[in-house]
Length: 267
Image (cartoon, rainbow, N blue to C red):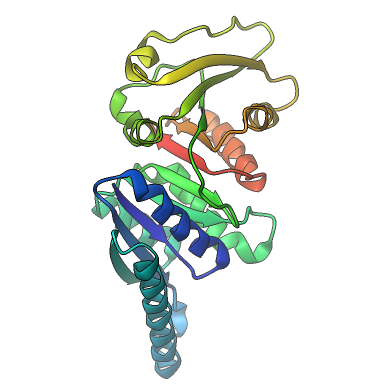
């Protein structure tokens, strides 16, 4: 599996790199690229010496991370990349140009203004990147993927390709999958989904319906806690500006309350 880890050298972003290294233990192909995007802004031409000093500090930080990770997991093929510009734009552009199976990014939630830039990056990648995005809460240590919640809506998943990374993970870890449909009170319980049954064939899975009496986010989190989920997976769709606005609000709520890794797939 080929993974990209954007880092800003915060504790949260480095925790995500540790998570990525642990996650890959069961995979034959193990490649991780550590990416940092430096944003010198408009002062570059005025303060050339300061910018050069900043560049050297960043390169030294990257070198230290690479050495530490190389010693920790020598079986993984490690690569480092340093790019320049607005992280919200350049990291998204970098992902589009390269074929990664998964992008893993650390986050502390979005309450703290100091975390707003990297938090905004997480939101931007969730919305715009076609690559699967996995957000890791600061301090979260990977142990296993015993229990996984796949949150779905009433729409069909267009193809098995959408679930490719998710299926890779749950097959490698022989995970128990809870297919969750949060519904209105007047909706009929979802007992099965013919297309999804085909995609999940051979896996341990079951369907579960929960009523969203208060909020969708609260309902999802309650199920995740009840099932001791190690991972929450959600599917982002391009469904017009109004529905996308609602979906972005849901994703932001999940990031604010993030207590477990959340994987966003794109359909």
